[in-house]
Every structure is written in structure tokens, then in C-alpha cells.
Image 1 (tube, rainbow, N blue to C red):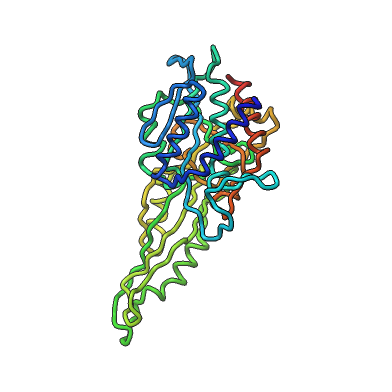
Image 2 (image 1 turned 90 degrees about the vertical axis):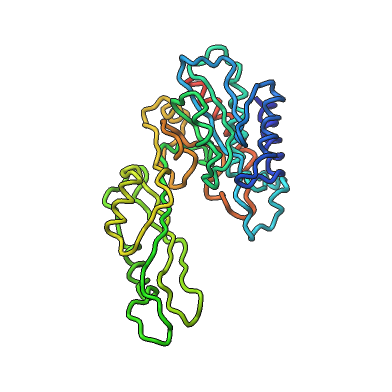
Length: 351
């Protein structure tokens, strides 16, 4: 296992050094294909998604999907280190995508490789290193699932400090419009949409959704963008807003849309309702195996490719979600080492 761990960390160095923004992951996909080839594991590729099946795959057995992504966001302007120069300082491996979700990805690849040749596992294993997670693009996991065998349960590799995220909030992004009447700024106008902002913002800030989840808490609604007007002497006809809504497991996305379109003092149009909340029962053998290893359960406020799965799914991986998308992103080397060991121990209890 020591050699496998060292190889996984070396792979992460290589992945960090390769630019892999969402929809531009061709070269990291090729490097992941190389990993499989080096370990004599047949793999397949669809667009920039690379996947493989365990050697003893049996269509009559349930299948466990191991999934994480190899795309990244773009580095923000606050970086002080080269985001594409992987290097270790004080036990921290720096680089874009190291924490989100490179550490989890290489750890799952090591896990899959460890169990690839298991002669008679209780679960089939499917490893999928996928693209376009950060952009929720059309050529990521959602495009791969139709060509995979049915999935019974999944581990989605994201930074969770190797604790068990057994539920995850869904997401709806709304385009909001406050309507008014356009006019010349020199003339009276009692229907200026900008002047309606305080009332609308107050409503959005103070509105509370009745159902609160034991795991995920309340639905959270946040205004993230505002835009109005193009000329200093023209009152605009509307104010445009973007509202980010994180949905708990007490509501479907459609229920949230119906409620807000009825109650909100502005027009709210969802961009998509496909990213629903997800979960796995606490009594599922995979969760119970994690608890037996001293892991704690919690509900995650952040979105991942779990939202694209219709089966029970567990979010679990090395790294810390609070480091994701931050300047000078890093992951501790020992987090990867411990993550691989824990993944292997976890599957040992169920496979």
C-alpha cells in the first residue's frame, strides 16, 4: 500500500501541473488513462471522462461507483503561488485542484487499483474520473451515467476531512427581475425599479422556509448578483438579480420553484431544477462501516456530482471543503495517506 500511496501522490503532482479548467480536461484525462495503463487495468474514455471496471465484474452483483472529478475552477487573482507548480511546504502540497478534488480523486484511484483484482467481491467496482463538475456541464458524469451499468450506491470523492457527508443540499439558481417603467431621469417616475430594491432585498433576506432538515438545516437563499441601468440619464425598465438557493432534503427543487414564484415580490425564473438534494440512509452498510471506523456523519451545504445520481451516495474524501476555490489551495500530504488507508479499510468491511 505504501508504494500505491506514493504513486497516487505523484499522480496528483502531475495533475496539478496540467491545466484542466472545466471543458478543457483533455490532458488530465490522458494522464489518468496512463495511470490505468501503468497498472495494467483496461479503461475506457467518453469525452474527458475516464472509467474502468473491476476484473471480476459480474452483472448479477450490485455495483458501487467510485467517482471524483479532475476539472478545476480558474485560479483567482489572490494567488501568491503559481497555481500550476505543485510543491510541498511544511507537509502541504500546493496547487490548483490539490484539495478540490485532486486529493480525493487520486485516493479513489488508489482504492480502485488496490481492489481491482479482488477475486470475488460482494460489489462490482466502477471507477469514474469525470469532467465538468465545477461548471455542471453537459459532458460530465451526467453524460456518462447512461452508458454505465446500473449503480446501486456511490462514493463521491470530495474534501470532507474523511468524515461521512450522508446528505447534500441541492441547488437552484434563479434569474430575478424587478420590473418598473423606463424614463428620462429628468422627469418624475414613481415606478423606478431601483427604488424597489430595499423592499425586495428585505423580503429575500427575511423569508423563511417552513421545513428545516435535521441534517441539512434550513433552505438558504442568497442574492449573488445585481445589475441595472446603462446610462446615467435613463431610469431602467428593470433590475436584474441572481439568487442562489440551497435546498434541503425536505423539499424537491420543483416545490421551491412553485413556492417562490407564488410568493416572491419579483419574477423568479430557475435556470435548472435538476440539481436536487441527495442522501444515503444512515443504516446503509457503507455508512455503518464508516461509523465503525470512528467517522462522524453530517450534512454538506456544498454541491457536488452527487446531485446527478439517483442512487444512495456518500460524499467522502481527504481535504477540507473550506480550502476549495481559495487562493494558494493546498492539501496535506498526510491527509492523502490517511484517506487512502481509510478508503481501503472502509471497503474491506463491505466488499
